[in-house]
Figure: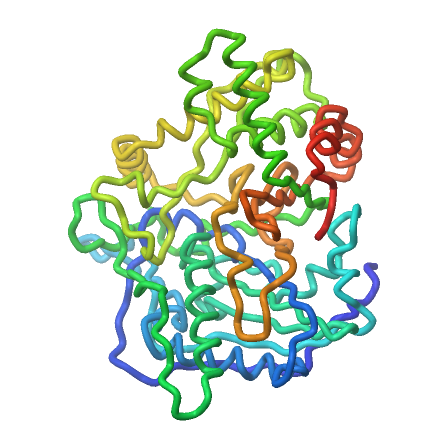
Length: 469
């Protein structure tokens, strides 16, 4: 039996927007395909907030008030629930089901909790695994997106820490929004929260966040039609991911280390005669190649085994016409490299080859290929709970989320959507192109990763370390 959690819930409330005409928003292909995955769980650690936020109750109340403003405005659909419609043929037989957002102001959940005896240093200990208590700083653990039929599509848990710090765990249904939409919402919520601190009578500053676009993308450019899944009842397609033992570590890469990884890959590609691959390199490719190689080695795969890198790619800017950045939904695909033999990936010069392979996979995610994949999926819809090897993004402005009580000092995720080999990227706290990579592996594979000579050499030479802050 696991030890009892030090986190206890003090209160819970449902935040609802004012009533307005009821509407439905049908989920698009990218949304529905996520129905078996877990909710997004991302949290921010704050040092002891100044007055008037000296208590967790004050932080919780202010956050709830800001959410009420957001839901009463452009983000009204976030307060909804999912609803399933059954589609019938001419004989009346059910031939499929579709899912929509029922925008009826059902509300979001805000929780106030206290972590007895847990300080900020316990949440982000240096040179140690991500502690299990982090999981308890989030609500809706183990919920999958299908549960949005009954559970709120968004929730926040404010947890008071023993040293006065606060951890705010945000949870969002992944069939409602991808990472881009999620962080855009938090940015807008933070702006609303700060604006509410203006003295009475002072004009509130306008927010810089653009209005979200909830209308779902359609391949033909028209109004998105409901995506019909081939089942008589949606629960037929529902599977819940099994929990497996995992260890999590956070790798911190400074801007200098990111540049060094890119330069190493560039030199290897030039030496191999791949000038085009060297010219197209990005720092992202250098980082992903290192992580891909080191995880592959930690898994002790046979030399003749094949391996491939998978990562989440944002489709918004690759579509023609492009979707706006403020598109609020899912617009991502898992792009994958061509399979490569383990011996080739880990051989001398393999870092450059791995980086170039990632670059080719990203470049191949064009408007034409995206539309072809949508057409193939529409012809034979499949829902899956397997997420990509690498997700998140160092371009999400996590440390810019200032709600009025100061900027966060760390970003952490809950246990949702984690599996052996899952890596999530965040911007480094110091900015400037630094990156944090949260890696989840089985205990056996993590033990091997910690001893990996290439990783340790890259870490020590670039001042990047296994850290949690």
